[in-house]
Length: 413
Image 1 (tube, helix red, strand yellow):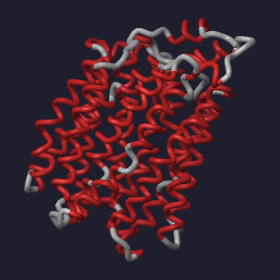
Image 2 (tube, helix red, strand yellow; image 1 turned 135 degrees about the vertical axis):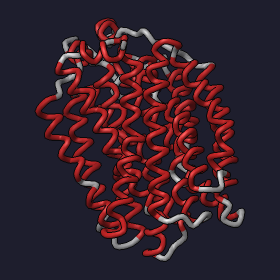
Image 3 (cartoon, helix red, strand yellow; image 1 turned 120 degrees about the vertical axis):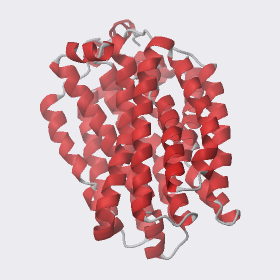
Image 4 (cartoon, one colour; image 1 turned 180 degrees about the vertical axis):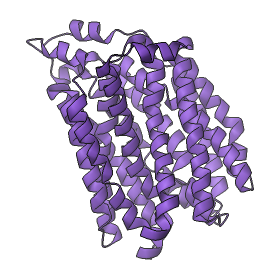
């Protein structure tokens, strides 16, 4: 009832902002995850190993910190709204261009550029939303925002299921241009963040360097936390369709159906733990979700049948994205207020950079162990869950931070 009351209390601007940010991250994830479903198909067309194509995933993730930093700086200077529109338009066009790749090299370059555009979207959308909604609503709103990621995975799996047999991997990338239409909605309905507007009224604002000074330990901790988070999430998602295809010879229909099931689990997990974190605290919610993933890992990797794999993957993603559901609120709350457009996204995407080798590590290990993808998945995910729980549990927290007061009281240079 509390969530329903909050939704009813939202004004029109708050609702539009939440919808736009959720869709922005959903469609960004949709464009990204289309690639992971077609690694095998691309490898076959270009006559290379799957591990070679996985470098496209690696470079996409590795390029994201560049976008988070550059677009974040622009958002802290010019506003969240216009930079968000630029991000959405850019990643959509680069997704479309990927479908024309004549060889693997061109595809990898385009995916790296796509990574730059993708890197900016999350931090800007999250800061715009968190600075717009009331403090009491940030937990469940955080869960909704982060649910955009598995929502994008779900959408990608459905599109792959329905369209891949007829249009191939290139056609899927052409479909990926559709998120550009979201720019029209943002332009017409979304307003600028109230906290940013309050900060823009100040005659003087500190430079990036001055604002970062004194917050370096916080940034280091946040980057390490997000490295663990990204190993945790990408370690359970990116290679899983390939594992089902190559090790178990499941059809594209079966793989996509399992993906739909675990994407639903991921959405429910993000919503559940995001809302729960508003009552019990961000750290406790993240640690609980990470620890619950550990006993699920065996069923997820060694289920042995489509039904058991679907159940294991559903439970795994409920836990993984449950922990992630806390992150949009958590990173924005601990962020220095004058860097809220830059800090959350940069920390997140630097963590992505440090974890960007995940797909390559897992596919290389699997090939080294005689295509034993189950072992590669199982023995890379368990350490990630433990490290995540430790970093989250011993970290900082500012669950009741007042963003408007932060903007008013932020130091000027």
